[in-house]
Image (tube, rainbow, N blue to C red; front, side):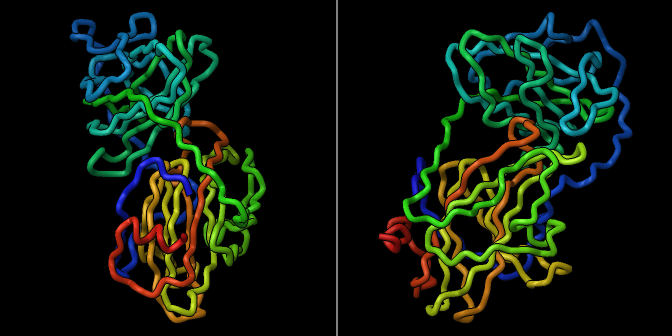
Length: 348
């Protein structure tokens, strides 16, 4: 497995259930009752009120502070929620080379939305509503990841709010390195059908799908999967992959994972769709490996889950796929902490 960033990974988790959402559809969002103040032409403009007077910012831009209070409501996009009467602020960027960008509102003080137009103005090229769900970045705060931009083309970033929400924000615009994973030779492939608009997951959607709880066995020490997002009946869905893995004779199962985008690995229990919750969790990717150790009776079966950490694609695309890789060691006998070198040595 390829890892761009080397880390020491030892995860020891309590065996109590954790309140993660195992579903594949974005949860319903409460309505906004906020009413924005009227536009104020005398406001000191840290950003433009419209595309015509957008403020140019450099790449990178870090912790640029502003407020949408006093701005007009000039623009609206559904990604997936429409904004209502929220004021918006506009910035522009002019990349000097082709690159991938993250546009991050972490630390903003209200329910934000954000999207980007290119110079064709034929819809947005990227958007996000609710990337973050709480501290430290804030609840219902937005982030766009992996946005492709081209040298010499101008782009416009619109900072908006949900419903009538408005307030103070922080914005980062930074370049990110692409993450490319190699599927190891001889690995078992997930073989799930390609994601598409209107997709119905009957392959390994488990308790989150209408497939009757279908889960896919993993019996190979190397496994390559695909996850992502898709649109169905106008709603955003994420692909959640549910697996069955048998505990080896040693009673200890070690799973090392990596992904092209930030991804959860969960051990689940109890093994009942009406009660199932997360027993332990590890976040993997992008190109950062993580390790999970599961102990149990030899031959007993583990419910294991892999899926995106967010309910919508990083750039607001209707359909978006990415790769992940799992390595399973069936001969681990020790449960004490290991260094990264020790863990990797298990697979040599």
